[in-house]
Amino acid sequence: MARDVKKRGKPAYTNRRNRQKYLKKKDNKKKLSKSAVPIIKYTWDETKTPRENVRDMGIAFNPNDAVPIAEHRKEIIDAEPIDGVSIVVPKPEKKVTGRKKNEKQAAHIISNLEQQVKEEEEARAGQDRKFRLFHRETELCVYMLARHGEDFQAMTRDPKNLWQYTPKQWAKKIRTHKESEMCKFLETA
Image (cartoon, rainbow, N blue to C red):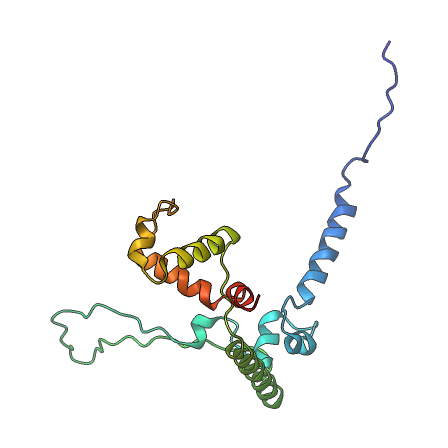
């Protein structure tokens, strides 16, 4: 006689219930904008599809459609037109469906995006690049400068040159060391 075993753990998969939960999550994900740009998030309309939203903002949904790529076709050799038959086959243009975009809104968004990019570029241009060396390399550069000065050939032959740096590599390392904040700190101390 078999004994009754109580089932524990997660209940069995209920097709109907889990399917509804999945569809709800999918709908919510579709509506949200995943853009990190604040103006795009702000103007995103949840009732529209992503393609319509982007078109209304004046941004290209597909960059390949925005800038046409010249197709290199092989020319037909010895193509001669026959009476009443044209050789050139016209290419059908893509139809744009849906509502027309709001020109004012699109111009505002594009100008705002361009302004943000310009500000970021100016901020990057204003920053000086910080050069840093590892602590061990800084010690090595200080030692080499004290021992050999600017003679990179002598630095190459030095027994402490374990990594077998070439004179050009030494010149670059010494230049980086002199531009670093650590060198400026050591000079002031």
